[in-house]
Image (tube, rainbow, N blue to C red; front, side, top):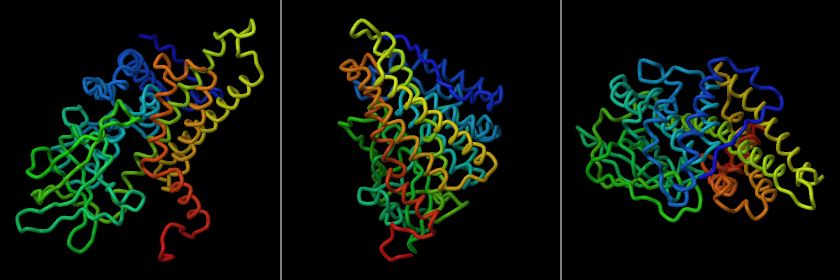
Length: 396
């Protein structure tokens, strides 16, 4: 079992921009991750198993809905602190961050923003404590980048709704106690429904044989004439904008999280290059290695500044969907490239479980696609700067 020797790079002294509370919480999560996640994560990734025993500890350090108000069980923290927590979790593993991100931004966020007071009090405190696990059902087998085409639907049956359809690629689904499910009513309008474990006709088969996010549990949501109580409908907002606003929150967290993965790969490559001797000197003395390392720290620093500014805008309520898309796309792409360069610096050792590099690389292959693919985010930016959408056939 290797010791976690991670030291966070801060080339532009960004710590001076953070408050003492933000740094304290970040450092608390970092130490928790070093002590509790790093020693076991390779084993769980190799076994393709989610370390569910970590849930109470993750809840204790505020990983679940940290920005949710205190009256609903959250910590009432700011958006930059949320980002820093996601950064520290993804620094050890994208799957761990993914589970926390889903719980926070895709389950707790819509209940907080669009739920009734009764729904908030029933679910949010338990979700914040990790006593309940949630998941988010938007993507369907035939509708990924085009969620508006979804066919999952519900019909009004008088005293309840009858839900039918299926969702896939759902983080946490096999272990979830509640699913925030997006479905169309009889008029074709999209609404959010809270579907609870145990409802007849509701099943959550697990997705097996993944090469990525192996320490995260993924599955489907299948609805076969599920009777959903009418008070489980999210009343605060309908239409596609509702789930997309949740994705904004999640993508924001991913933009921070990807930096964590990149930082870990860079830190490992820097240390290895100083210790690895070839031709009677450390490989860190070679020009090509220094080029790789210099480019890594440059890209990490650019991403840190981009995301810090995005955090300020989001805290002020000014961050746009397009700005969040830019940061998510840039930072994940950056992290993936750094992981690949770090693997080369580690040579053959880079493919082994002794180092985190290959695991990060495989995980990031999912992160670069989910919650908006790399190319779709590029087109969101293109639409924002030109005013012309390029991904609709009808020209609208």
